[in-house]
Each structure stands twice: as C-alpha cells, then as structure tokens.
Image (cartoon, rainbow, N blue to C red; front, side, top):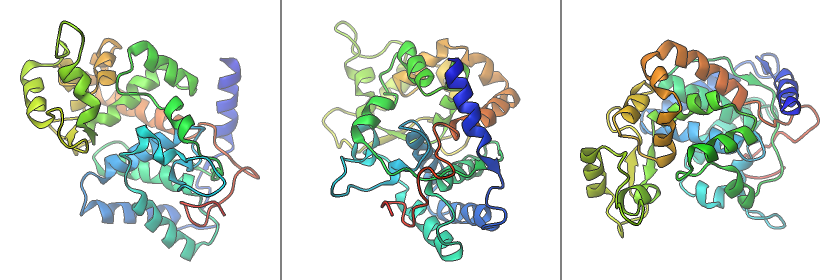
Length: 309
C-alpha cells in the first residue's frame, strides 16, 4: 500500500495545472467550446465523454489507449472488448484533436483531451468544476483482454468492487464518490437482465429493486429484444449531474447491481450533503486522472488519437 501511495504521489507531481499555458495557451478553451458545441445536439454527450475517461484510466492508466483502433501486428485493442462495445464519443475526440493539431501540432496528448473533456462534461451537466493537472502522454499498447480483467462489472458485489478499485489505487471512499457519475448516462438493458429476470433460483427479480421501478424497467427491457436497447441510470434527471443518484439508491431505484450494493457503503450521508460530495468528487477525479500516467520521455503525442505515430 505504501508503494502504491508513493507511486501515485510521484505521478501526480509530474503533472501540473496549466501545462500547455505556453506551448498552446488556447488548448483548454478549445476543448471546452467544442464539447459544449457538440452537446447542444446530443444531451447524452457529457455522460459519454466521462465514461470514456473512466474506461481509459481503469486499463493500464490514463494514456488514451482506449482510443486506439485495431492495427496489424498488435493484439485486439481495448475498444473491441465486451465492456467497451457500447463506448461512444470517439468522433468528438477526433474533432478536438484535429483542431488542436492544426493550431499546435504534436503538442496536446489524446490522454489530456480525454481528461479535459471529462471535466467539461461534468460541468456542462451541472456538476462541480476542478482544475485538471495535464502533461500526460499517450500509450502505444492497448489490450482487449486487459480491459476485460481491469474494468468493474455491473454484477460485481461490494467486495469485488472494493478489490477492483483498490487494485487501481483508489480507496473505498473514492469508489463511492466516483460512483455518482451514474447520475447521468444510460446502460444497455442486457446489463440488468440478471437483476430483473434471473436473480436466483427462487426469486426472479432482485428484491432490493423498488417494485414499481422494476415493472417499468421490464416493460422496456424485455428479454429477447434488441440488445442495444438502453435505459437511463437516473430515471428522474438523466441528463443532470445532481444528488438524485444517491436518492434513487435509497429508494431502490439503482439500475445496476454494482450501484445498488453501494447503498450499504454509507452513500446515505453523501445523498444529503452535496457540498461534501462535490469536494470529494473533485479530489477523486484529480486522483483518477493521475493513475499510471506516462510523462516526459514515456509514451508519445499522437497526431491521430486512433493510431500510433
């Protein structure tokens, strides 16, 4: 544990707020403007961009490896792994990268674009703002197998979730705090079939689900339908970054099993204290963005986020 903590401190210290202030002073403003522009036509985009950042950082660190396309001579990349098949927003990252490359060639990493886009996404959805330490470089390796191993699954128990987050250097408190990201966004129906129809040998539906909520989900998520059918994490305010996520859990309206089990992990305190949660969330997002980053002579600055240089 001491080794993990020291490693994280070292990595975070190599990043800094305003890293591009001299080399490309307009970089952060451009990311902000483009995310806001594209979100006008797609209100689900903030959740999409936040999820991209999470899925990138949870697999070998925040190095934009989730953006790499399949390439000859390399193993199948992260984006083709089963947990990542529903990821979207790649074209928005491409647009941001194209504009930044035209203004400041080979300067802004794709990893930093993901981190800045995630911050802007949260702010755009009504969540808190924070200063993003930048200076990450892009990785050259991407593994679908590692993505399957590294990413938390919707069916995880509380113990499995804790072990997964701890393996990435994130505490129980940070796990609970970051889980509120599910206050925005959508999940595929197939990810909740187990809770609705196959809970165990004696009970079809997870008894922790509010009965009226379960009935509504079943009308939308009937088995055998289109596997791409989606439902919102938060049925009340699906596009707003607010406290409703925790309140839904308290009332049995948590969509994923991995979300609902967190109800037993002191989420009730955070559901009542938005100010405390915002403070914790800012700190947790900065820590998340420092996980196993590549800096200095490590990695590269990709000219195209989908391909290695």
